[in-house]
Every structure is written in structure tokens, then in C-alpha cells.
Length: 157
Image 1 (spheres, helix red, strand yellow):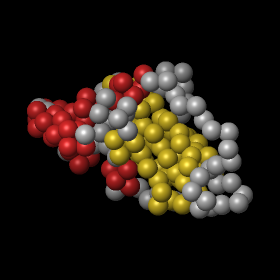
Image 2 (cartoon, one colour; image 1 turned 180 degrees about the vertical axis):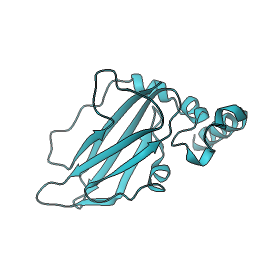
Image 3 (cartoon, rainbow, N blue to C red; image 1 turned 120 degrees about the vertical axis):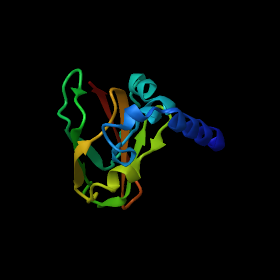
Image 4 (tube, rainbow, N blue to C red; image 1 turned 45 degrees about the vertical axis):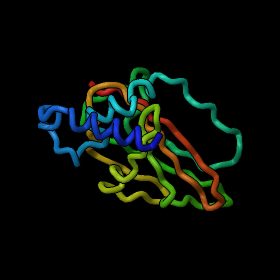
């Protein structure tokens, strides 16, 4: 299965036109236009949100982009996130993950190359994501391995 996904990704990337990458280099994209198609970004945007557990766990607050009804943004845009630990365990910043789209493709390294994730959060000023609907799933654990998860759904104009 992993080989099929890798092959589909490679095929999509190779088929992507040069014009789509002319505005920003491939290393500058958090998600490239080809990956948005390949990893079903819009399908992930349209899925129902997961139910949240009612256990004691860390919290993730999304400060930017600011929450609005339609959450439409223009790229590049800012992403700012705050982590809140419970009183009995600190946040483990090395456990931070960002998963993209319906297939939950791991793009953590694309964010961490621009920002340092700390126990209190992070801020990224120029998130480059192509036009369309996208879902980013943010995850963090505390020292007791309790996982917090929060979705950021955006529509880029």
C-alpha cells in the first residue's frame, strides 16, 4: 500500500507543470499543488470532524488564521498555535506532528524546517498552500503520552 501511495505521489509530482511551481520553489510549499490532488486535500476538508475524547489531555489552540465562518485565506498566510499542558505533565515538543488531507500525509518536517516547536507552541508567518480546500491535523503529546489533536481547515483563494 505504501509503495502504491509513493508511486502515485511520484507520478503526480512528475506530471505537475512547471507553471504551478513558478511562484514559489518546491521547497517553499507546505503542500504542493500536485500533493493537494494526490493526497486528497479537498476530500479531507469535506470529511466530518472527528469526535473529541473527554479525557484529560493537552490542548491545542489555533490563534492564526483567526477563526471565521468560512475560513478563507490568501496564500501565503500565518499559522500560530498554542499548546496548553495539563498540571500533571508537560508538553513534549518532539512529539509534534502535522498530517495533511484525508490520507493524513505527514508534513511535519516541512513546518519544522521554518519554525522551532516549543512546549508553548509555534508561529509560521508564510504558509504556502495552493488554492483550494485543505485540512491539516495537528498533534502533540504530553510526557504521559496523552495525545491532543486539532484540525485546521482552510480554503485558500
